[in-house]
Amino acid sequence: MTVRIEDSADVADDAEIGDGSLVWHLAQVREGAVLGAGCVVGRGAYVGPGVTMGDHCKLQNYALVYEPAVLEAGVFVGPAVVFTNDHYPRAINPDGTLKTGADWEAVGVTCRTGASIGARSVCVAPVTIGAWALVAAGSVVVSDVPDFALVAGVPAKRVRWVGKAGLPLELGGQTGSWVCPQTGERYTEADGVLTVAAHSPG
Image 1: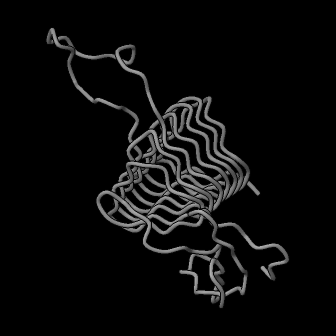
Image 2: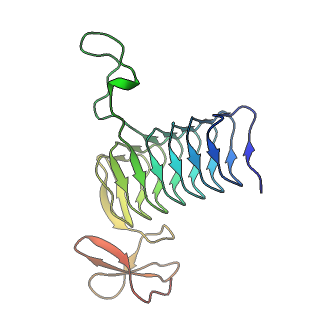
Image 3: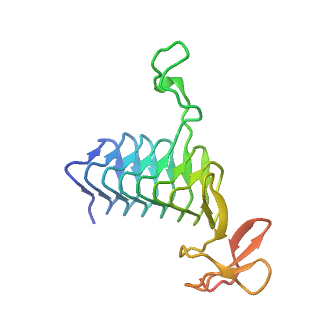
């Protein structure tokens, strides 16, 4: 496999692009960014300096992933999603001078393995999106999202549980038991935390 970078894309010389990855038209990958194998960076997407992405991540068109974001393997970032990186954004200092990179401390969004962020969502750093979680389109995430949680709204709140296949889970026949309707994988809920059940068929 080879890396494919479209001619109109802007990829920094010291960015690391993993084998089999694809960077589409007008995308920008900044200095020091690290992309794993088999990643896709969509048209017009932005990957900030030092951002790290694991294998098989997908950034859809015009997603903006600002540093110091960390995406583990298999993360999906939908069209026009924004990951912020500043607690208190300002263009100028109190004396009216233009702010520079030295005038603020960047904070990042972390997405754990298999997480998905729906189109036009905004993740306000610093937050962590749990493994296999699903953020519904148009949501504003201002607090950490648990593993396997489906969150929606402004601000985003958990409305369901989802499995690794991304489908909402169904009750598994007893309290705290859930099952994926597609894979049959079973999950156990305790104290607001969902985990894959022991001996699950998934």
